[in-house]
Length: 131
Image 1 (tube, rainbow, N blue to C red):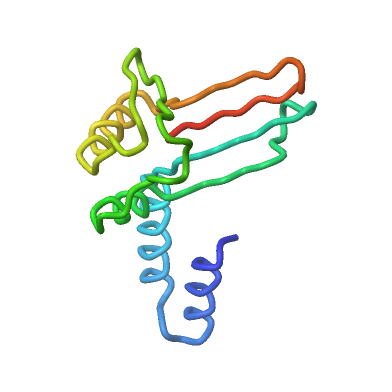
Image 2 (tube, rainbow, N blue to C red):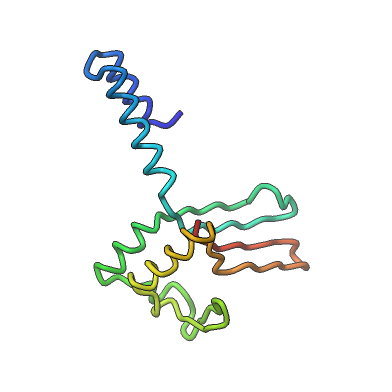
């Protein structure tokens, strides 16, 4: 049970909310959580079922950073490019508008894969996607 739902239930127990109000709040909370999109990074070792490393970054946070003028500059080596659907991009190329286009595609297809890498020598797999 999420912390938010616990807080809502405590408010019912304290008499601050009636059950109908709590039901509406919980329903709205679930709707918001279902619509949330995240940039997800997964690194798998020998166990391909459970990732060794899991990172989830809310897309709203990425958009906020972009709108505030922050970029991903300096996080990747100079000249680093990603190939997405046959087109090369540097991390500096991403704009809020581009993220909106990607989110539109996610709404249609459910997932947008940015990178998938298998390293047979190290028996590792890296996945970067938006879902």
